Image 1 (spheres, rainbow, N blue to C red):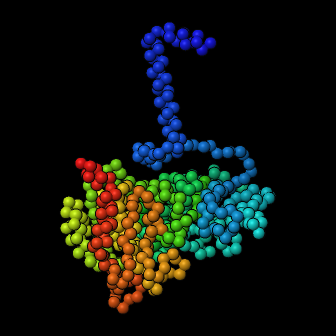
Image 2 (image 1 turned 60 degrees about the vertical axis):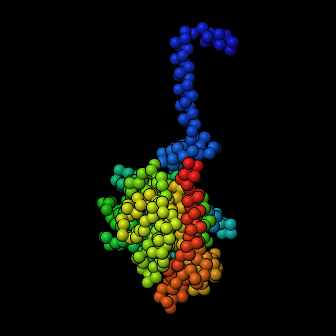
Image 3 (image 1 turned 90 degrees about the vertical axis):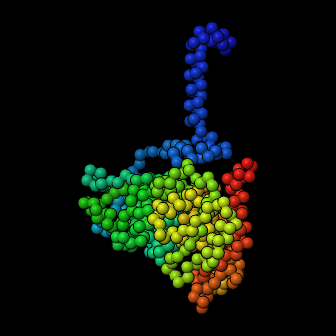
Length: 479
């Protein structure tokens, strides 16, 4: 039979045969393009398809089970579902829940008269049927929570209100709290706000039109916190609102939500919390990239020649800047040692956030003190190097329970920077009293109350490492 059809195909007129071949090739190409997302999971990603997967959300679609039931509100979580004490690390989305303005609470609807259903499965206590237990809620709203900074909806035996009389908001709403530490942009960018983005991504609930709802802590217009929020939030969500103000903007006493996301905020900077960050690299990179794009950075145009930025920290809430003490000598050394490389000294606080992003993306080697001034390290272009100052751990600077011990050189924020593999981190170690000076002279805390004295030979070792590790250097050497 197959031979018959083969002979019949050969007898077809050449023009028809060519047409059929072209159609077959087109079909094969279409099939290949359709299979590309699957192929990406199995093979080494090229830069082209890596960007396609990240930016165009070119992922495999899987339909969800949809069977009618009498359940009105629903929920799903990522995190421990056995121990109620693990509420700090749980991330959840609640669907079809409503806010009662009179009682100032979110309500989770269960059909009147229906039996309770288990929520947690405690190994010793058995089934738990509520979202609020032992004076705490179901999830955390902040990176360093106490019981009062947790949250869970209140279960009520009611029918969901009719959408004819009550507004149902379709976009995702994300609950969180602001950690009121003395102003530090790093905690705002990578803990307060990153937690909301990560929560949506981890639960597959990302929505660029999401509304971030901040509990409590209303700051006045023009506050420095508000300025930072305005620089970050529009990159991945529609806006941020204070919960009660937002609810009061609606005329009805009840407002219903198709999706409320909450939880997942964790301390990001300490090495002791690395296990909470490990595995989130892709999401953190996506968050960083969205912010760069929002501020007009062209990701297709990284620098083609080396450029060194030396950070001059001249503003701080402390008397000691934790800055580079001998910065003029460092600048002169770099210019003399690397005469063909452009070197610029910057003071970040004198620039807008957009200006900071664009300057960083033109940089191949960043030399910076640690702490809040280094919080923009991840915005360096792919393949860049960051030389970040350590601090020396003396008895006053030692924090019980932290990994760094007395007498060691501590990389302050390595617990987060180590999870941005698109840049290489080179930590300048501070090894003893000869590597820093106390400010004021009678200070005793080698973490906070110091300026750093750079050793040129050790700095050169790190700069040389950065240059030799760059693709540009290798290409120049071949020529």
